[in-house]
Image 1 (cartoon, rainbow, N blue to C red):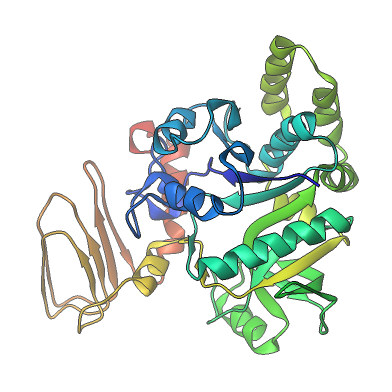
Image 2 (cartoon, one colour):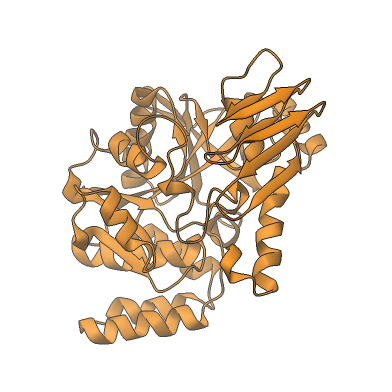
Length: 360
């Protein structure tokens, strides 16, 4: 059984705007620790996989940044999409190429580039368990985590009441269902129910299992990639990829496949995790001053409470304010109420609709 890691590094990180930008999104930023989020992801995987077995999928625009930040990664291990079409097409394109290189039984561990993980040894245990289960079972394997609090920014996995199996030190459950990011009341209900886990966005599967599920749940899109799997000439392959991406709809793997399949298992991860999905999440994780502020840069705060203020150039002064997020960049100043930073992505979409490309 051959296994490979696939780092998904093509996202925009729009909820961390304006620090995260289209040409230099969140995964390439230094937010925690010495390295960027992408570099830290690669470093976490290095004890599990030889560098030749680590791949990254990103866009053509971002591929040079991936190469720059990961010099140990071979250029041939970077899979470049023509442009973003979300995770379902990205995983399909990567699976075409990895199946061609390793065969239909290759186990692919698809992991986001922009997450924070503590307790790395326990993370390794969960990934190894998921790989072993995916090699044995005709199922998409996810990694779920026990919620530490009701969170509206994460998706949830509902699992069986009783474990299905023990894989090493990890517990495996059947998946009963997936839930998108809930409202506050629903998130609290999920946490209190006891059978809901946070969805980490990590997927592990055999290539053959992926194609079965993709064809079953995305029958309109599957023929496009079936044709691509047959293409052998490099020039014809590249042209076909361009044509497919021009026709295929943008769709997440969670929504397109996972929420519909009956063939999904979940490994319970015991490591600490965050997907750093918003400025609110960053405030929650960072060390705070006695007034519960997170202040980065030259910041003067008078009678200010529970704020996140970040500036690497301009001096920022605040007087008698509470629960604000203030983030300064070279060309954009973001101000929003703490608790509303999930909506920052709506702001980015508004810029895109209005054609304000310089702000993206």
